[in-house]
Image (tube, rainbow, N blue to C red; front, side):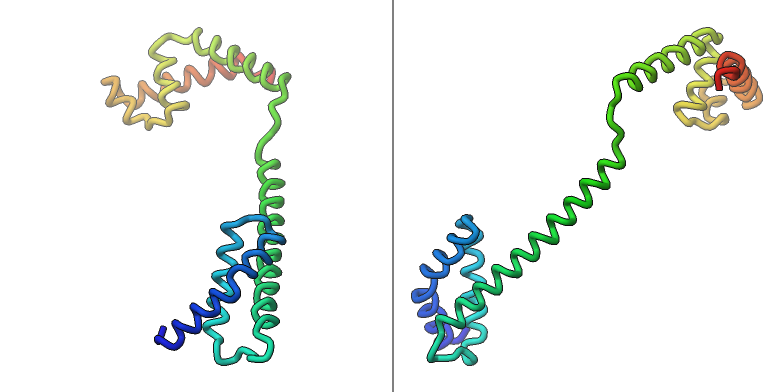
Length: 170
């Protein structure tokens, strides 16, 4: 800013800051936001210094303040609508934890684990590595020092066992 503009900004701040703070505090009851809005009004007034009606500067300054409050209200409405929509969307993503469903899932898991325990240890290990740990058959074969064909046979054996055990319920 130039020295003349600096003096004008300082004079505007001294004249309008207390009234603007009070104006905003009556409406929003948040001191830091009132300070921010006051600063924004003073910035806009000093940027448009030459276009201010010298006979009614108060009306001009408080019109800017009222416009800022309206803009703030619109932003809050948009944010609230967005948050409400986001909350509704999130509610669709998450199912409620129904105690009956939780119990049923625990029982199903226990049944599957019991069926897996019936398998020989090596077959169970290979099946878990392949199906649950998502390891490739080649990686399992290299890790256990066996052929890929042997890994395939263990996976098939475990799959057939589980199908026989749960096939009639499916």
